[in-house]
Image 1 (spheres, rainbow, N blue to C red):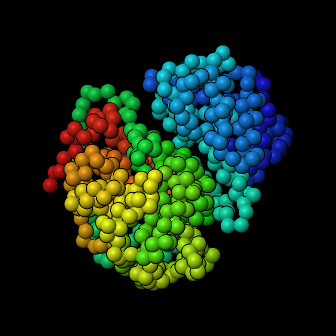
Image 2: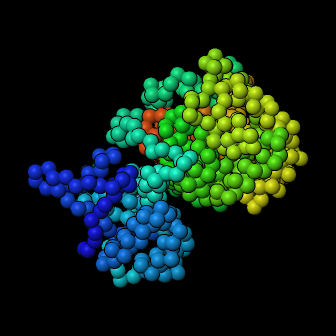
Length: 542
């Protein structure tokens, strides 16, 4: 098979160097240490999702042209989606059948550097003569490529762009723990324990703590023990279907990433790492207003069409609209407005620690505000900022104005606990309701979100999508939430623990772990798909 010598690292995209170990040449990455013996042959493949299953098609005869196409995008610093669909039908022989390009992955296999185009086809594709192998691939194997050795090509772009960064771009993060060491961390709690050792005490307390006496924080997690799974037997659970969509965005897993603040406390690249990890996991993330990376730079790190932007409503309505317009220009798919923060809850640990962002770190989305003085604050200054700037008069009438301002983007309302609020929110034009109590960080002694979920689902019916967060620390917790009516389940702190342990790879491993736990729990519960969870599988047992 013809090809060209691989010049860039599969892991991080850095330029490879050649070394001779006395027996043979090997390619070595000076940045992360990845090594390939000989010259890995670049091969182009297609992973085609069809109604009949996933097909792997491996190219023959045309790697130079297609590999040149992908490296051309890399050299230009563009994402492959910018033009690859113009070539893909002709090259793969999937004429007229491609519905969408899901992703482009690169992975090493038997000294080959494989660039795989992952596409979805509307019917059985018509394969051209240029395909030498054609076989059905199990969903588990496909997912193994995406979550294990697979590296999204757009990650190469982001990493290489970081090396040529202009002023204001985030710096590349260190690798942290090698991915192999993550295998010893087998639960989210393991990741939290490992993260605590890496974070400063102030940062760990900021991420971990709840409001006041932390009753709500504990209730969110403890409430899951009040539910029992009434499992089925003798059902076909060989390949549970867990893919879903949220407001029209397809995701491979219903476990998504909630907005949380200050990711650069956990890893130097901050929220950019989170966005890439979520995309690689087949998930999606919601970028926070209180991020330490600007919403524009987060959007550049992954596909913004698979991300949402979380918004606080400010007394300065013009500034609120400015944030919305920035999110639109950056390409975000939806706006998620937080409704449970008219004032800031008191996090006792932060008060005692005198929490402050370190020098050189700032709330990047607030720096652009006229005057630009609110970017870096101490904990007390943050509370003062919320009191002075957040709109405590954010009402249903204001929500209706915000729905119109966000259009054509859909608006999600986050922080809902009551059925009557949910009904009115949907009546005012919101497309989705997010059951949340801010991770137990706002009102103490509030209701656990898993307990509030069913009431909200019943109130909304099929008029809007319903999501939930709070206390989810395992795939089994996610199963209970999905069975109680959530379309998707969001996690916040678990991802932060992964970031603190090993940056992007750590966050990816946490999301993969939760997904694996969900799939296994569904198999043990006798549920072949998400719809079957709703059929009385989960019951309250108190």
